[in-house]
Length: 475
Image (cartoon, rainbow, N blue to C red; front, side, top):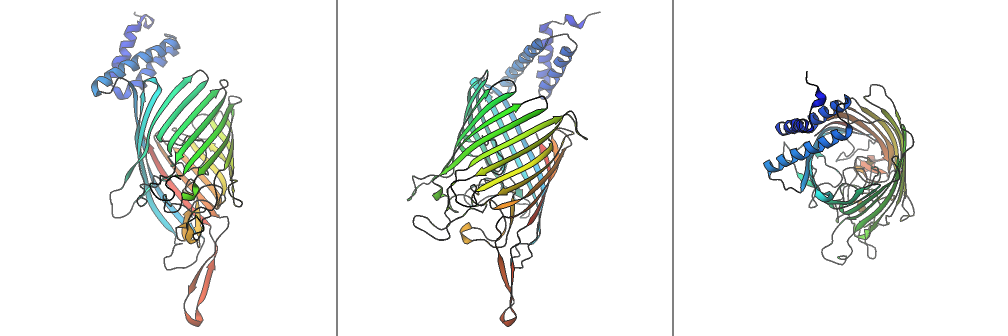
């Protein structure tokens, strides 16, 4: 009888390599499963298994390069994406009548498509791109804070936009230190909530990320970014292009195998914010105080206040061995964030707090969360924040550049309740409920009838119920 322990390294490596070349799609999965089983039975060591993995990966890469013509300095190509379908319902407490009926209940159907690639290269270089669906915003391109497209217009063909296009270099990634730089249109380098940046916002400019691992359980990170908000070609403000600068320090700690915490402190500032009028960039949201008429060097619609807030966040996570109907260890997280903008005298604070049970994304996992958020009108620039967090405006000043109706942005507070479940690693269903209202409600009025019998109907009710039902496929 031949004992498996007599299997030579060369034969074992050839077997794994052949499996990878014959079945590229199953290469990593099948090779790893075989090596893990051999380690489990004590036939080879963990070190030997890792060396064999490297040999198999190198052989597979060389064969793939030969077949596709991929340059030899490219070490990995990853294709990825997701598709989300959404049913969305709006219900308004305001019953103010009107010719356009802006407060009628609404149901809409939407989708989001994202697909892209990440290319890893030798010497720690990386490039990436991603396309996304979105709604057009005049001559500006797609909506900067949403990838959703609404099903409408008799099956018309929809738009696809560049969502990411970046280059990255990580010159230091050894020992306790990490240093990387990115330029282009990128994922947001700052670890923040949607109170500061909508999750779909992909800034344009440059970013630097640095890290230091104090030990295996404690680490420090520093994130910095310089983002271009607009480029002014000609005119009186041609040299006053608006930028956003930011810096964030984070401390992540794992105190026990079950208890971990995170702390963050950040500062952001917008330069030349006087050039961010409603016509300068996509005017998607409302809330900031703007000039109602031309005043001095300011045109109607220009921002009255400056924005350079300080943002602090904290999170505490405790992970139980198991949870009800939950696959794997069960995390419970308490978290919150506060923001103060000294660039405005009033309505310049924001905060949220909440609890998160579980975390969906893997088969058999679920998530249930509740947050309360209060975002005052001039705590932060209205065009950065969550596009789903809005309320009904009975009336609105002309300087906002948008009329009455449901609007998202700043000057809003309310509850966000979310539940989701992953039927597989690739498919998750979820529902989110927003109960929101304006912090300082405006009052709208409509005159009904004419002559002696005319009457004026007024209302300042802004409460809104918004429900999103999602199905997400990722690949």
